[in-house]
Amino acid sequence: MDDILVEREERGPVSVLTMVYRPYNLLGPKLMDAIAAELAGAQAAGSRAIILRSGLRHFCTVDADRHQHLISKMS
Image 1 (tube, rainbow, N blue to C red):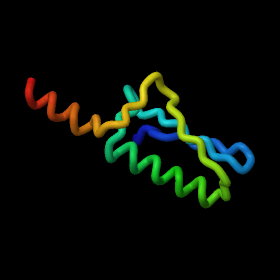
Image 2: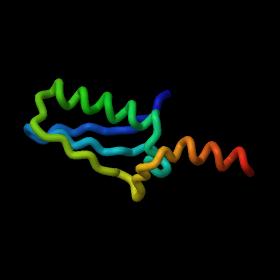
Image 3: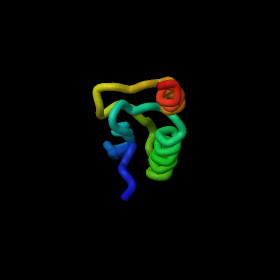
Image 4: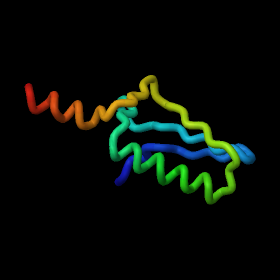
């Protein structure tokens, strides 16, 4: 079963994309692909504006997936 990484809610002409990629919304290829898919869905739904927010406490803007992998190899 695939976990949902980004939830999309339509509020009239506005789409709200909420990142819920546990545990820290690490911004790497997996989350970027999910965001891109939801952006395409918002565009197809006719959204005039898109809000991107975190549904978790954190939102890491670095390629943390790769960074975390490198740190685990050093341990």
